[in-house]
Length: 142
Image 1 (cartoon, rainbow, N blue to C red):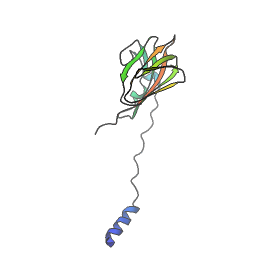
Image 2 (tube, helix red, strand yellow):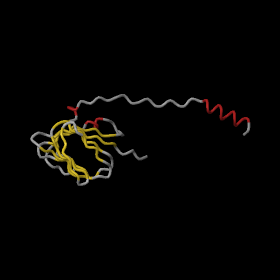
Image 3 (cartoon, rainbow, N blue to C red):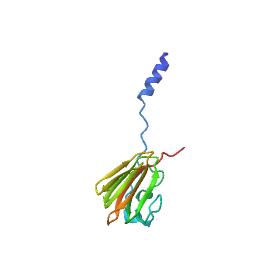
Image 4 (cartoon, one colour):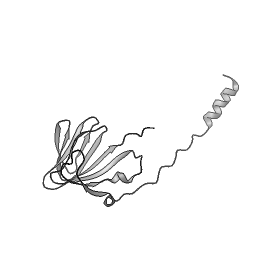
C-alpha cells in the first residue's frame, strides 16, 4: 500500500460520522378526537365504535394503533393478514379466530396473531368487547 493511500485511510477513519436526523416532535392524541360509529371491518358484522388513533399520525407511519368497541353481536370478520397483529382486550368478552382455531378472551388477555393466518374476533356476552388493535405497516416502497 502506498504511503498516501494509508494516510487517506487513516484520515477517513478519524472523520466523525454524520449526526442522525433529529426525531420528529411527539404527537399526543385524545381518543375523543378520533371516534366514529361504523360497521367493523372485514364483513361489516354488526356495529362498532372505532377510535382510529394512528390515523392522526402523518404518513408514512410505521404501525397502526387502534381501539375498537364491538357492540353486542358484532365481529371483525375472518380475513388474511400479511403482518403480525395483536388484539388486546380492555373489557368485555369475545372469541378470537386464527386459521380454524378459536379461543375465548376476556379483559387483560391478548391474542398475538401471526402473518399468513386468517383471523377475526367476535363479541360475546352482554357488554361490548373493547379492544386495542396494533400491527406494523408495510415498509414504504421507493
